[in-house]
Image 1 (cartoon, one colour):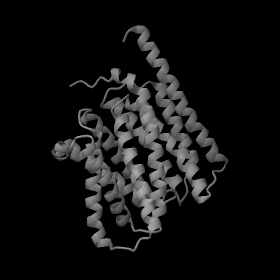
Image 2 (cartoon, one colour):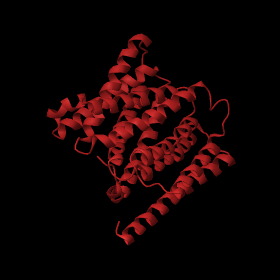
Image 3 (cartoon, helix red, strand yellow):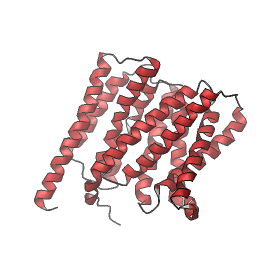
Image 4 (cartoon, helix red, strand yellow):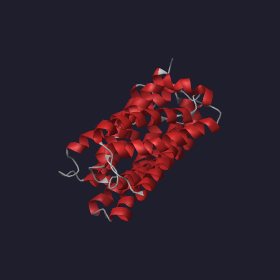
Length: 301
């Protein structure tokens, strides 16, 4: 099978919008789950949130009439995607409990670089030198925001790097699964495996009494996570990975905003310059994509 995805360029606007929405919901989830760390242990938080998310996902599966297709969750590609999502969730939440939200988000911003390389090498998408430069400059902006220091690059940072590779595997597997499989089933598959594994870990970690406030935080996190899952599956099925992936950089804006509103964190001048560079890189990628599409239309390709 030849992976020539020129026709997917028509879905880029929808893919970009889905990515933007997914990122906002995922960062909201991060903020809520980080706040819940004051009320619950790691495995307990992941299990309780997973229980809520699984219930929501199962409800969506039933309401959409996919209840008879649950056996699909045992297909190898679906299991691989769910396992990758499990790894990404475990690495990220554990690191989130021990790192500032802005630092962790900044490290995860290397994912679009990895996805661009995968899209160019494995999926044979056209990635010109200008877009490569824009992504590289955007990564330099990320480094300005991170301002590497002992606090940002400690042992927990290795978990953030592991999360980055798991996200790449999850998103790539989503593309190869194809659009015929309902997104809600993919979400349910991930939710089930995450909940079950967290439940097993909780047996060894022990149970902590959790307040109503903690439960509400986890419930809000669950709703954001379900919405983010749905949009992330949609964006991987529409448009080119090399175009859509850089929009993950918007997570920097949201994480810094939430950091200010919740934890009173204010970026310094160097970080502000980095944010401007990241945003400028994203806008330039959109500009280059429009030019590429226009040129392809003019030549009839």
